[in-house]
Length: 289
Ligand SMILES: C[S@@+](CC[C@H](N)C(=O)[O-])C[C@H]1O[C@@H](n2cnc3c(N)ncnc32)[C@H](O)[C@@H]1O
Image 1 (cartoon, rainbow, N blue to C red):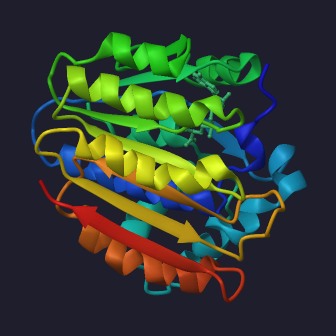
Image 2: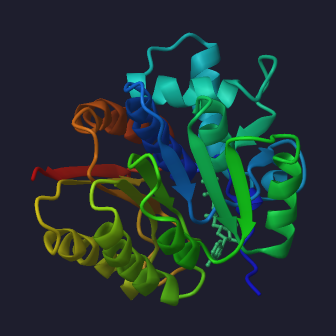
């Protein structure tokens, strides 16, 4: 079984990028008064305690969300997309201290309206238990399944309201995940071409990770009339041959037209605020249909 536990990484630079994008994507879906689905293929535990256990061992949130949270407390000027993300983080924190970090299921759940639907898939025995407990009192609008998210996604598309956002966020602990993401995008877009698909991937010193953006673009190019957006946030130098996450990327198929400008403002600011050395950088590129 997998050893990856998202609690070690909750609120790090990769979550900052991923969840800033996610919040904007959901906000955009909310602009229309029509129900939609969010499908989260790799959900994790849902909510993370930053003051104990895994999070304090890794300290990763300290140089991610904590830095941004502190700037917010100080009244700093923050780009709109990051501000909207921090509003969602604040929803699970009562006071001025940052105690809890909302994972993607919690962020989506707190943003959705009555009539919208959240489908969550998770396979790790401990994470699924946490997720089920977390949503146990929520009777409507959220379904949690202990199942493979790649297969689960295919089975639930197209969503009945024909509006949907799919978040694909594996841990890439096994190389197979890279290949499965590409195949899943092909299969899913064949069943639901108009959906928005947001794929997160790690920047690590690994062949599969280096090749991945080009492969994602090739999959998108196979689709008729598709737009995509690709954003990366790198916080430090690539540790040549070493392990460890030095950045991450988001690849979005059918992004809202508003996302590019929001990220054009947010990414340079994130490089300045949570970049760790002079190699910190971002990329932002997009293609219109
Ligand atoms: C990066 S974490 C998810 C974090 C979460 N999406 C968030 O943003 O808060 C990846 C999760 O996928 C789970 N997982 C791994 N393989 C899976 C699969 N085939 N189907 C569903 N979940 C899987 C792992 O146990 C882990 O909890």
